[in-house]
Length: 432
Ligand SMILES: *[C@@H]1O[C@H](CO)[C@@H](O)[C@H](O)[C@H]1NC(C)=O
Ligand SMILES: *[C@@H]1O[C@H](CO)[C@@H](O)[C@H](O)[C@H]1NC(C)=O
Image (cartoon, rainbow, N blue to C red; front, side, top):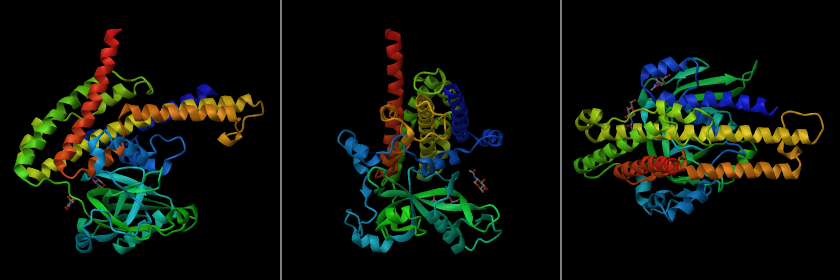
């Protein structure tokens, strides 16, 4: 039994490791797409599968804890859904002029403003998300076909915004991302006209600041009752751009050059399978092969010619790639946890002596076995946090920085921290 569950999980892990490969060039993507889920599906699957034993969910408490030691965390702030007031920034005047009202989609992920360079897939199954998607598609008058809808004119694309929700407090981050719908596909319950799910292909267009949530009162209860009412928020553009363009562009470029050195070291160390303890076999070396080279020198011409704009685009491309690395590591840890957890559950269920009934529920197990499993989950959670490669909170910090130079510094910090972690593993190995 134990080995069977492990074997199944290995397969699950193989399937979920591949998405990171899709950060590669177009031909690689073409070659891989035939038999693999896309990276976007991978990232987007998280919000809907966040379960009891998913890693890193206490986002707000973690972020508060880190504020004391890591300065960049101070830029992350959280809002109550029911807060009817404008946010503390105090610029009430601006907010009246600049802000617009938009549907709000809270979830457990952070999307970087890569715009048309990356397609994200969001699969809507909750009644309120289905309703939101339907309303948006209807507004945009894209009715070519019942199941498949493509919005060709970028200016007319329906838009909504996604925002990180902290599971521990139910609050949302104050900086989110505008998504524009590129394509939609409806799937119906078999033999009926009832929509089972709507798959949206979206571009993460730009960052926004949430001024306030318009109808957040009692949202959790409505959600539990499977209400079709979705949230709306008043939002305004949040532009982490630099003020003195040329001077800063140079700084950012230097920052990225430094970053690319650390990046290459990390890639090489992964390729050597360093730091592979705590991951399914092969995860780290495959990841090392898959990570895209960051060659700033090769991009320098484009960066200079296209000035600020393409510098920003280059930056977000790298940030996106790093986030994929983090997702892959989290997925690796998660797979190992699921395998161990399943094994324990099967053992515990067998120990009860009665015939094995599947699926096994926690409630059916003896208290001492439940405690054992909770301990296992707690340890995995701690390992994940200690690893320092978190695909969510550190990226909320990234999009909350006041300008692109701070963003570049923060990304460099993340990459450098990983390089140092790997180097300390090498040091320990050699000292033995
Ligand atoms: C995103 O890309 C589209 C082209 O697909 C462009 O028209 C639009 O201006 C871009 N948006 C931002 C915020 O850069
Ligand atoms: C995103 O999806 C659209 C619609 O399916 C497609 O035309 C486009 O090439 C895709 N872009 C990327 C970057 O994959």
